Amino acid sequence: MNLRAKIGLFCIAALFFGCAGKEPQIITRTEYKDVYVTVSCIDEMPQKPERDRSDPDNQKKIAEYFKACEDLLKQCVGGVQ
Picture 1 (tube, helix red, strand yellow):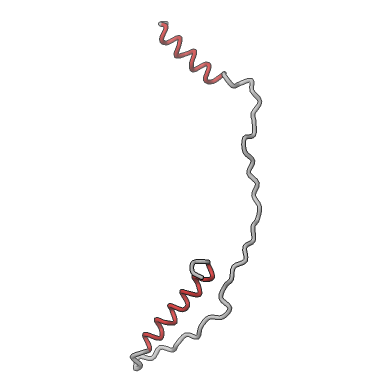
Picture 2 (spheres, helix red, strand yellow):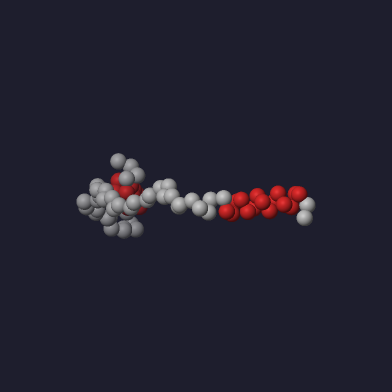
């Protein structure tokens, strides 16, 4: 066996057995706790307009309704105040 192989085996042995006699140490400790967060949410949904195909402004009213619902939902989850 040549010198290079002996040095390589010694390094591998030192790697595996270098810390064998040491007691294991706890480095970090994780503790989980429940955290309750109050969320201001929707008290009441706006009234949904009825669909009326003869009224040209009806689609605009429906779009405004969905925009208002989206804004309320964003406030509920904390997106926009």
